[in-house]
Image (tube, rainbow, N blue to C red; front, side):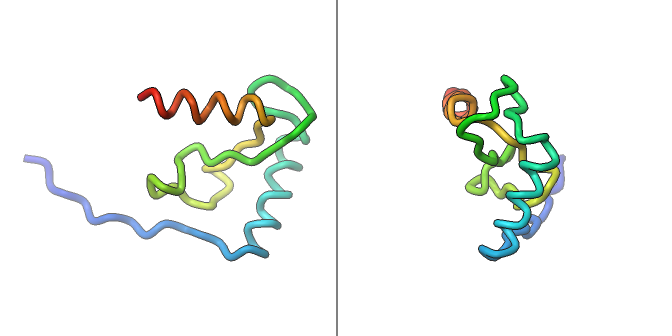
Length: 79
């Protein structure tokens, strides 16, 4: 029998701290989409969605262009 683990509180930053992290992620990823290499219309994507208890943490964020970001969400919705 698997014991049920208690839900871990997620890290959700305030607006100023999130904006700083957002910029750090863009810089870390070299201002390029990590899926296709584009340098246009960049966004920061949560690998594990906030709605699924995803954190606002460096490990959970990646730079994607607008197109790849939409595709990432479309793929997630198909699961």
